Length: 237
Ligand SMILES: O=P(O)(O)OC[C@H]1O[C@H](OP(=O)(O)OP(=O)(O)O)[C@H](O)[C@@H]1O
Ligand SMILES: O=c1cc[nH]c(=O)[nH]1
Ligand SMILES: [Mg+2]
Image (cartoon, rainbow, N blue to C red):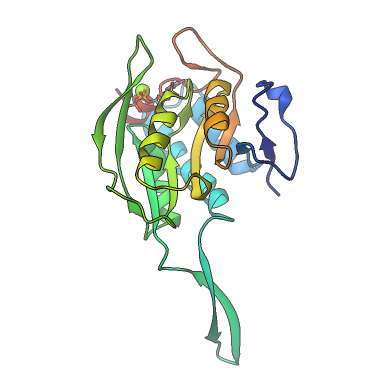
C-alpha cells in the first residue's frame, strides 16, 4: 500500500498532506518502502562519497520507477500454455510506446535504475541548467522527438523539484510535442512545495513519485534539508 498524498495548493506545508482517494489535483506518492527510505538517507548524508551517491540514485530510480509503473505500464491479456494446461496471462503491451526523459545532468543518476525495469523504453535526453543567480533553467540539449504518439507513457527522471522552473520547462516541452500529462509520471527524490504548487496549478492530472517532500528552499534556491547539489554529487564536480 502506497502513501498517497493529495497535494493541496491552498496550503503547501507537510502538515497539509491529506489521504484522499479521489482528486483532480496533482497526486504525489511517497511510497513508505524501507529501501527507498534507506537510499534516501544515504543520499542525504553529506559524508556519502560520489560513488555511493550514484548507487543511491540508481536504487532510488529503480524502486520509485517500480512504484510508478504500477498503474501506468500498458498491459494486454493473452493466454499461455504451461506444462500442464493453458491459462490466462497478462503481459506488457509492446505496441504502446514508453519513453523515459532524464533531465540532465542529475536525472541521469535515476535513469539506470529506471531502465532496468523499462528495458524497451526510448530515452530522450533533455539538458537543463539552472542559472545560479536568476534560478531560471537554460536548455542546452534537447533530444525530444518532434511529436509523441498520444498514447506514449512518459516517465521523467529528475531527483530535485525545487523552485519548479526546470520541471515546468520540461512539461512545456513535452506537452508541446503531444505528450499527455495524464499518461506522464515524474520520478524524483526530493520535492519541495514551490515546485509541487506550480505543477498542481498547471497539470492537475499529473502524478509524482518521490522519496520525500521537504519543507522549504533556502535563499539560493536549494531544498532544505534536501541533499545538496544532486548533479555535482552524482558526477563528483
Ligand atoms: O526546480 P528548480 O529550481 O528548477 O531546480 C531543480 C533543478 O536543479 C537541478 O539541476 P541543475 O540545474 O543544478 O543542473 P545539474 O543537474 O546539471 O546539476 C535539478 O536536477 C533540477 O533539474
Ligand atoms: O537543492 C537543490 C535544488 C536544486 N538542485 C539541486 O541539485 N539541489
Ligand atoms: Mg546542479
